[in-house]
Image 1 (cartoon, one colour):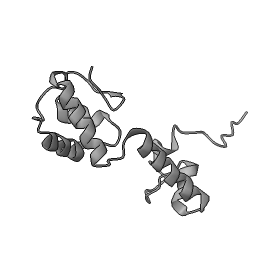
Image 2 (cartoon, rainbow, N blue to C red; image 1 turned 60 degrees about the vertical axis):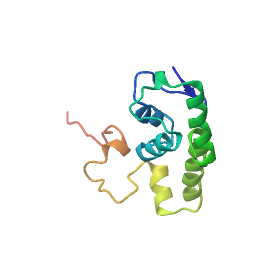
Image 3 (tube, rainbow, N blue to C red; image 1 turned 180 degrees about the vertical axis):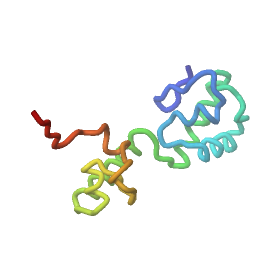
Length: 124
């Protein structure tokens, strides 16, 4: 299993898909990296040489892409900032409700979690 920037990328996948296992690198950036390094995107990641892996790592750092820990830290800081200034988005994040204007009377189960039964009175 090739190791790239401290992250294990899968063996059997094409390079352009294997690069996406690095947090912060999506389809567009993966294609850009393959073009800059001069690797065929269809090449399997297990077939990459050490030199090619080093070139990929060098390209990511040269282009100053934020990835993994730095990106997660920045996103967390942004959410903390929104909560600290008591913005609407920050409050929605902290309450675990949809942030972008979706309805919550029905649906929104992904953000709200499993249903919680409230105020059920049983008759005797």
